[in-house]
Length: 237
Image (tube, rainbow, N blue to C red):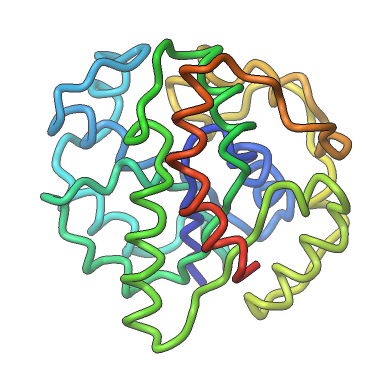
């Protein structure tokens, strides 16, 4: 099985990738379209040239590779994908060959976290609009809503949330998913030194989050723009 987990940035996506890698039967891939996205858009991101140099620049080549044999002879392949990387000029047909799942997080928490790593985020940067578009496209192909999981539910009860996710995927849950070794991982993207400080210090999922962060006015507007997309997908968790 090839599981494509679609989220925006700062959605607990790396921790969930670590959880699947800890199973022992699962290969993982970290944002394989990142280099192609930066090459195609010219957008400025931290470590831009390093990312472009580390990954194939052609989205079609990336799509072909993630539909290929599962690496390392594993039975499961977890692919961490960013919704914002699926720009309109990239053919999304490859998604039909994957089991697509959508990971969401409250926009206020996303913006609070993302703005610490990259100044002045825009709605396009945080991926909510793109996530809703991809969700609708997959739902149209399937004839029903695809799986949705909220990072808040994982933080509230990791064992239950991951058990439910695994059951829905038709795979077994294992306690190994709840813990991993601290530090960088060999499958981390080259951008990890900029983005993954907190998860590298972790050995499992953090405790439930507290109240929503109090944001500056400029960020409140951004959150208000993203909320309708989050709320709609939240209904499918």
